[in-house]
Amino acid sequence: MRNIRSNYSPEQDTHLQKPTKEEDPFERLCVYLELCQDFAFFIVATPGPSTLNKVSDRLANRFPESFRRIHFQDASKLEQLPQELANLDENTSSKEKEGLIIFVSTQGDRDEVEAAWARTLDILNERRNWLMQACPHALIMAGTPDLPLLVHDHAPDLWSVRSSVFILPESPDYVPPEDTRRSLSWDKPWPLSSELEDGGRYKELADALGANPRQGEQASRGRLLARAADAWLLRGQPDSAMEVLEEAERVFKDIDDVRSRAVTMGKIADIFEMRGELDEALRIRREEELPVYERLGDIDSLAKVNCQLGDGALRQGNRKQAEYYVKRSYDLLCRLQQQDTISLVGRNLGTLMYKLGNCDKALDILRQSRDAYWTLGCAGEADEVTNKITEIEKNI
Image (cartoon, rainbow, N blue to C red; front, side):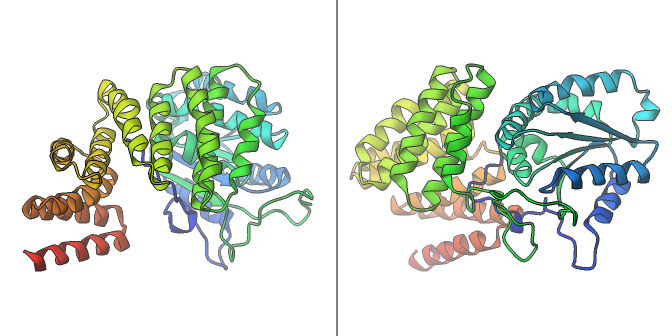
């Protein structure tokens, strides 16, 4: 299961390598390159192309024998990167590949570049196993401040494999465009996620792909629309979120991406539930989500949806049906391996078990949830679950 964090914040993420005020971020990058072994994935973000060129030149001087740069003058050619990497792998001896540093960059209009990175990252994420063998040392992707977010969204499996983000300030001679939207000051939050980016920004990017019939572009369009919905929901704008989610659902249906459509329908059900339209929310979960996850064998999603159905049935006063869905969710939870799912589903399911009067199972599940939160480093959530456990123990 992907490690999806809708409230992702770089300030709380170990991927972001934040140097001290006295430390040169470039030198920190070099230290990481010198220490890494086997496959390592780096994202270098900076607002200006002149800075990227200088970073490339400095790396070439620091690592003259192992540095290789792959630069695409035309952003539309970026999706040729997997083939370029394959050619490099084929024409490089095993000994030469040890310690190899590959620096990837492109240029062009901002929207065009972002769309190109999205397409390319989708491909690389699907071929991650091959990539880790073809690039036995370091792969550096360099671009604008949007790039870490694109990697997080479109290549989650690569993101989770030894990846680090380095933010380099612009060079003194760089003049940012008038419409620049970002600051790289360490004293301000760095806007990499829907927490800080307005939903309209993702909608604009999605609209830019609207006329392109290719399936890859339409898949990227659907994900951008879903991202816009996340951003608007965080800002308390469910109507705007619903509008783009309905558009995303049509996109995923047209390209026959059944899982993404099911996930989107789940978000639509969430909004119906927020509006108090529980019957429609439960209908969507039963008819649009559950059958898809059953066909796909997606245990994590099945555990979550069954828990939601159980909660909804209990709120409707249908205790027998609630017990049915809760039992299904519990049986699935026992088979889970992903800590992020165990933590969230376990927390909700344990609370639901307690409401149904099964205190022993509730405590067992909540303890699993608490331990999973601790494993993930989410101390605040772990403390909240601990408080719930204490409350139940006092009432037994």
